[in-house]
Image (cartoon, rainbow, N blue to C red; front, top):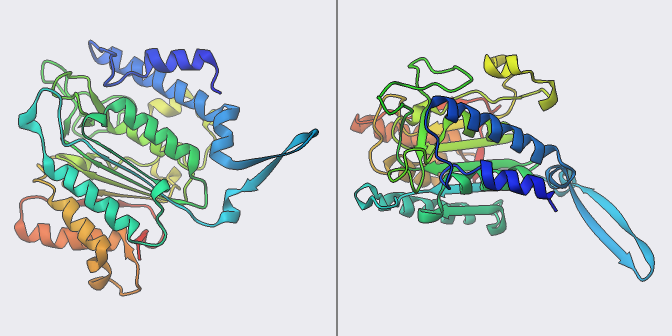
Length: 335
């Protein structure tokens, strides 16, 4: 079990969307540092390392002392993991509800399970009032604890989005300072229109994604201004303990971005994303249309599905999907 002091810190400090009221930019920066420290402590703890790197089987035989057997994840072959996170419903703000988001995530879940490489117990779907920032962090940690270097991970996020600004309307770019427009991008959580601090920003999301060991990571973001979720992976090719405060503050060079990540975004950084059109077209692609119009190899890849969605949305001309592709080859999603 996790030590009591860690549980206390988790309850009292990691409460984005759950009770931590930040009053300004300094509070937000401090919270990000605390979250990062706590998560590193959790990740490097023996309990979490057991989940991150190995599967352990305990065998007991009468009075014989228990023997721990470590079975490499790689021996089991490539596993596919997915976190599907759709808000769609917003506390005390029904006018902001978007039922299409909930329909899209259900459709994506079904399409994945129709493909033989996906298993129900490897997919977590979180929607509506359960879709808080704290829950998103918990689910990302679940993913980090279960996947390994031989696996493929897919994260799907859909909600309202926008630039991060202070109460006076000025843009905020939290460390690392990596935004050309001076503002981080945020995703609104369930309480986001009821409590202004109930959001997840792009650098925090990038932090958790960079802790994944998977040989392939596909992030799909369907929200307004989602084109800003194209940050390069942190920590890639470097142990966490080798990073200094200076390297974190000044960001990470693209040449360090060795994680095989592909990011599919519904629009540019300064655009509105309409309905769930991007999600619906991607899902149609995963259902077979992507490969039909792609290379015909029997696999619907993230890149093929993006090309399919981009083609149709470009015809409408109202939004322009964007992609960051650091994956070697094509990221297989369904077959």
